[in-house]
Image 1 (cartoon, rainbow, N blue to C red):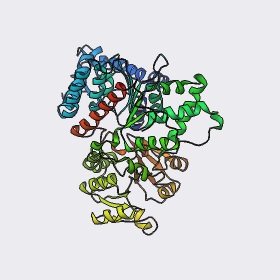
Image 2 (cartoon, helix red, strand yellow):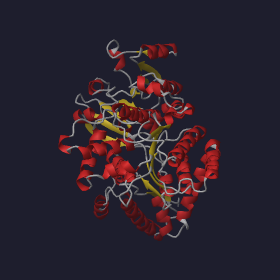
Image 3 (tube, one colour):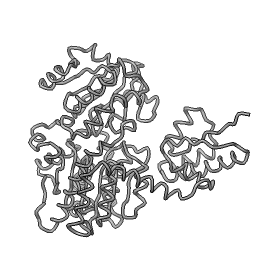
Image 4 (spheres, rainbow, N blue to C red):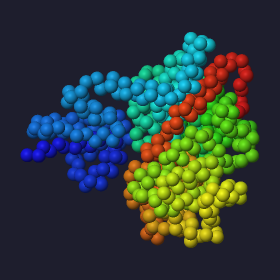
Amino acid sequence: KVPIIPGIMCINSFSSFERMTNFCKTRVPEELFRALEAAKGDDAAIKSIGIDHGTNICKTLLEIGVPGLHFYTLNLEIVPLGILKNLHLIKNVDSEADGKVSKIIRASLEDMPGLVNCLKEIPALHSNPFEGAKITASLYINAQNAALIKALRSFGAEVRWCNSAVLGMDMCVAEGIGKDEKIKIFACEDQNLKTYWKNSIEALVWEDKSGPNLVIDECGDLSVILHEGVKVEETDCEEKSGEPKWIGNGPDFKILNEMLCDNMAKEPQCWHRITRRIQGLTVGTISAAHKMLRLEGSGSLRLAVINTRDSITRSLARAHLQNEPSAEGKKMFSGRLHRVRSTLGESLAALLNVEMKGKIVLVYGYGDVGSACASSITAAGGVAKIIEIDPICALRASMDGYKVVSTEENRMEVFEADIYLSATGVKDTITVNHITSMKDQAAIASISHLNGEVDVAGLEEIAILEEKRDFCSVYQLPNKNKVTLISEGRLLDLSDQMGAAEPNILASVSLSIEALALLELWRERFSGRYTRGT
């Protein structure tokens, strides 16, 4: 007479459905499988099927007298709430979800006094300071950045928002904010490289075929789309030579180039038209700033750019970028360093489902981010060893108590590590030759924006993908050893285990600068003060 409460795991996406049913050896009704397969790639359609199917199951269970229902929401509440609403067990689902998002944003603002004061003072200059502005924002989708997006909307702007990385977004925030008709969100669960570029492109193109006046380009990928789009329109796609000479060229940009060529066939002058409309653009990371400076140096920069990363507050001098072409990862805003230092070690343990104590982690690069990685690994009980070609950075690592090794002189020691972590910003830091020399069950990760530091394409050519789970892909090498690639070889610190948010007080600084930079560009749009240049 022990009551049995059935557990309901909702269908939220095709990939999670396929993964869990295979893992659990679940028998799937053929009609359901056909419906889901037909809707594959349509996130809303998959959720609708999940709600209908879940509702039918729950109605049957309730009719036969189960004492209750236990939902495994996995922090994805849309389908469970839809089922409960259909069962008439709750009311006002939409308003409750909206209230939850508003509460999260208000909680973030409580610790962001700089942004709060900035947003109070801007309207004092003009009742609708961004009236008529069309803004495309490529920013991590989280509650902190949502505060800025909502403020821009309240100041009179139309806003289109996409995530600035393939991974790491809060879908609860995206769905809550997207209900405002003046804010359009371009994001989807289980986002991959193709849907990332697709969402970024769509965020730049308005329904009337126009584009934005202002652009927030945190990591520089919208700038890549704009400049590469113009380049494609000016040349024959078949004869287009080379790829963007930036960190991460390879599969990331090949997919983008294919999309741009397809778009050119439909609209030959799309990117020329959109680029001409843009009054200015802001960038906020060292990789994005570096892209703009290289474009400016080559004479091909087409936009006015305010580099908020170079502000005194964010502690980076322009000269540093010009003198250090491979400086990605060497200087980072302290918010990211704080996130890496405080959570990376524990996140590696959670992602790999291992105990970090005693694990040997080889960290490539000992710049600011590399040192934060080593510190976090040590704090979690791991043993950090460093590979560093810069003698000054190598000396710093040694004086901090870490053993510095090299692939040539310490080959046996190097390839006996348990985890390999690249924090250099240099393309092909971890090559296929390195990977094939690693021991069985080794793990590979990168802290870079794109996946150029790890030769992912080379790995996929020689290895067999044996298993894929959240943020981890297990490959079998030709020598039968297995390696685990974390977060597709990109931005480990934006995996779900770490989250994209930085401390609120630090986000307050960067978002305040972003708001003031946009205001400056918009106020001076007729003065000619800001033309091409960074």
